Length: 181
Ligand SMILES: Nc1[nH]c(=O)nc2c1ncn2[C@H]1C[C@H](O)[C@@H](COP(=O)(O)OP(=O)(O)OP(=O)(O)O)O1
Image (tube, rainbow, N blue to C red; front, side, top):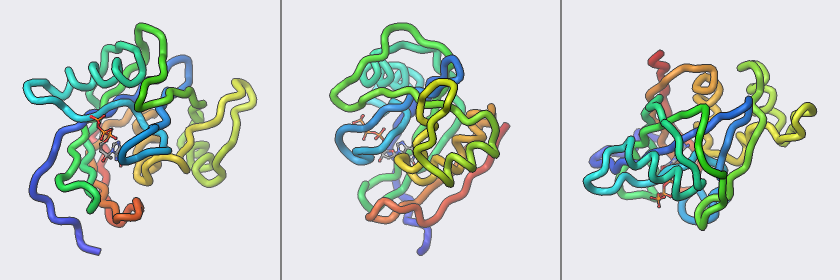
């Protein structure tokens, strides 16, 4: 397959929160990406900066406020959406408020593998539970297919840029990723 034609992009945000060695993800209850886990985010509204939208979406979808740091940029393309999704990805290690379920997302904490090697094992053998916390490890088998390519490095502190093109069945067909720090 060729790269999907890139004409226009629409801005989105996505925010990942880590606290006490655990990662907060949301189970998406509706829309594209339904029944998958993801960070919290959505469309940037007119007149809003991506950073402002990231804070608003995190509050709306998970009920919490955080000082988010911009860490990555992802271009997501799919025949299912008319414009590319240009996603600015944010990160924080603390937050205020109580994590709360919203109409769009059911938040859940996951154990983070302690090395990139352990991430690979968790990717190969899904549904493993961390014996010390009783939490499931990051559910890579229930996330967008490209996330397993960058999330391990992202959680070890690397920033990145990348692009992933999907087919209408939701499978990734073409991609590139580059670490920028
Ligand atoms: N972690 C991720 N990995 C990936 O490859 N694509 C992602 C992604 N997070 C989001 N996307 C893509 C898929 C989706 O089409 C688009 C928009 O993402 P979202 O699901 O966060 O936004 P929504 O369409 O729910 O927006 P709102 O209705 O404003 O919340 O970006």
